[in-house]
Length: 267
Image (tube, rainbow, N blue to C red):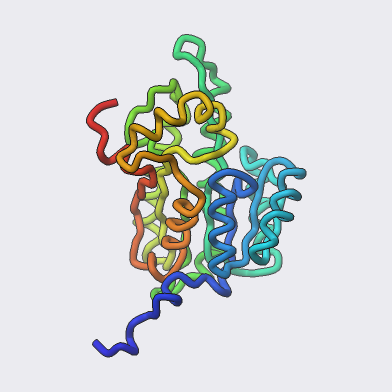
């Protein structure tokens, strides 16, 4: 095969000219991903329920590229549709959709309430599905056989192995999101849209702050790589899945957890 048929290293991971939406992109893993996409050259929209968080994220992320922040409560169907309409308002196509917005509810089994299911499933499972429905025409327009549009769902290693914390609805919602990823990958592949999921382990975030303060060293010590996740770990896998480097990959669940889920000998 002639050298001219190979993509250069820089081109493999270049996202220049791409347009992306990252939900829950104002903090934690979502901001790590948004920053990575921006640094790779993409134009990025981030969303969050809180307007002040959106304003601050846009200020911080603007250092790295063209970013816009839109407040939206994605637990509501009408808000998913409103966000989708705003995202494609100035562009008929969308190259990358990152479904990251999520919620967790921890409570003992005996007292775990219906609200703990409804709140978590609405945001962790229904919202990604609704956004795919709303944005599919724009994703189809962006994708080609050689360069498909990308959907990246943010799952969790809590859906791969059993965590110690009583996170019934969270683990269940993420396991369902992993399977939804596979179902959508099969359906949308012929339409030039790939669908993959990232299953993060422990990363610094507001959701994990109390846990890391209490037992962060213990958690890191149980990982084969003996640390928790860093910003570039999450940015790197997102850029890979969104770029030419990941164009032939769909239906995959990628654990990014220092080896915890894939090497666990028990729960």
